[in-house]
Structures are given as structure tokens and as C-alpha cells.
Length: 120
Image (tube, rainbow, N blue to C red; front, top):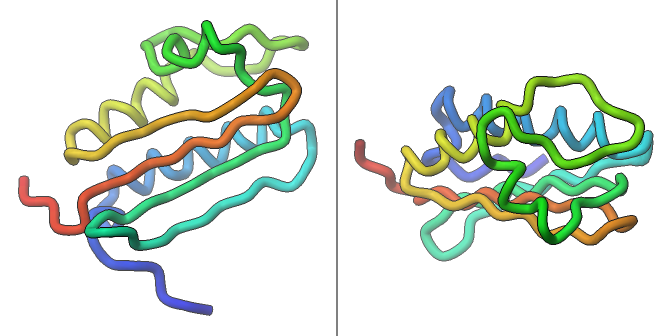
């Protein structure tokens, strides 16, 4: 198994954010396999987590990163709506970005990109 790139993903806060994305993919993924990829790209360490769940409507994509907000789901899922907000807080603090690509009925793919050489 290839060694994951070293860098910002090596500290504890990004691990928590990574686990939250994986947990969400498992929770909302309708029991289907999830995809997780970690790679180095142009000075960044990238994490991609994708699921095959119900997807996220266009108008809810930015809302899900706000504290205590969740996308509409049927049936309702457990949680308080802080996980993705926390992911964004961690990623922002480390000088990175987090994005979601999704369409209703086609799952969601979250991408975190963190600078390889972050200096706090």
C-alpha cells in the first residue's frame, strides 16, 4: 500500500475533519460503498470522499457548511448539523479549501485541499 503524502493531513485536526466526511458518507450513502482518495497535487494534500446517497440540492450546498444547518433529507438523519461546519473551520484555519459537488439522486463528493507546507 503506498504511503500517504506527508504534510498538513498529518496533524490531529484534519484527521477529525476527514473522519467526519467519511462518517457522513457512510450515514448518507444509502448503504452503498464510499470512495476515499488521498493524493498530492501541486503542493497540496487532497482528500476526496464520495458517496452514492440522495445528493444535495443546489440551494443547500453552501447551507450545509453553516453551524446547526443540515440539508433536507428523508428520512431524517441523526446529528446536530455541526460536522461540516467544523470541517470548514479546520480547513480554513489551515489555509485550505473544502468543496462539495453533488446532484440530487447522484450522491455527493467532498474535496479538501490543504497546503503541503502549512506554517501556523
